[in-house]
Length: 447
Image (cartoon, rainbow, N blue to C red; front, side):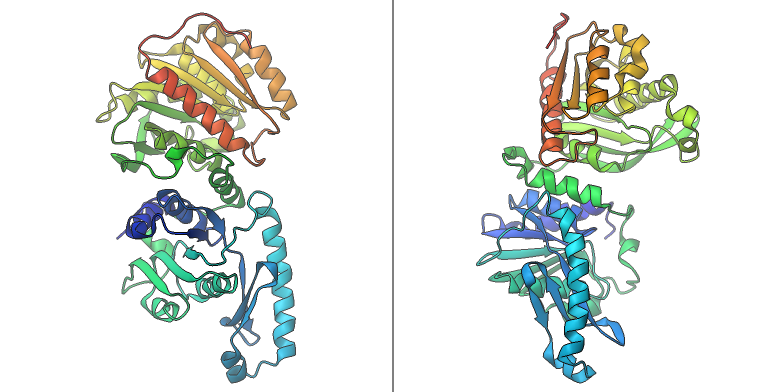
């Protein structure tokens, strides 16, 4: 079994874990790569998502051999048998534990700003990673979950080596693994897309999962997507990489235009896309520029070129099975908002029904704004002062129905707790409103 990416692995894992739905469970992702997998599991099981912060305690002369682990809130687990066999004294163990606790505190300090630790006492802990090679970290995580009071520990991974899996059955009460290949060499070989998971993506997923009032559709999507795959979009003699998700019953399609220095792997845009997918909207996230072109600052800010490519991508999307009739919209972030508005101004026969800009720079397409006819929502953070003023000025140039939504407490990248979730909610509601209506108001609205 080859997984498309961590999200695909998480959905497949969730299918096997469905008997736990409705139980008192907490899904715990191992940072960083395990969190995107755990996010999909938690969403499908309608369970809280948390991270499990652990540091393995390695034997001094053989660091890969674990003699224990430390976790948050002073949790420490020691294997006295391993210490005895390896001749490790209590003082040596304490010295190693102190160093690992310091590293743990640094790692936890940032993640815990958006997600306080979820209580595990008396609950089922589902520990999730993207794969297991040696099993030492996963074993430590299971031990720490038990030390935090979990009454039953489930370890769930998409792929693992057979040897590691045998050892892990001693650390967890239940072990679920989808694949144990004979020729296992590394976790990444079993993923088509095994790109690095950054701290920003982990934080964004934790924010989305821990939103104060999560929408019911985040808990369990009703149907699997009709299409969820990596695609190649032919544009102007170039072949640009993208990710296409089309729900079973698509109520609209949204093409994403990313900002400078970003692309289809943007963690924030992926969070927004997931929210749209759960609401029945198809999404196409693709790279507007090739890797070589991204180094040319002139191309990065060439709004005309980017808008033309965005329009071509929309036309390509229209030709895909099941995508000819649903309403189509553009979502632009940062400088990508200018490309989205430029493409909407031209429209080129694809029938643009709505535009949303998040932290956008519509001023870069100022000359084109009067020609935009699709209802346009400008979403800006209240603390993004310069961009907020640029959006206010740009809105005066729009002749279509438009609104300016200011997200309280948000800066340019919407990293503050709850702000990205609010931006995603606003985008979802705007697209659902205008991509499913047959007629749109043409009057100009002023906030």
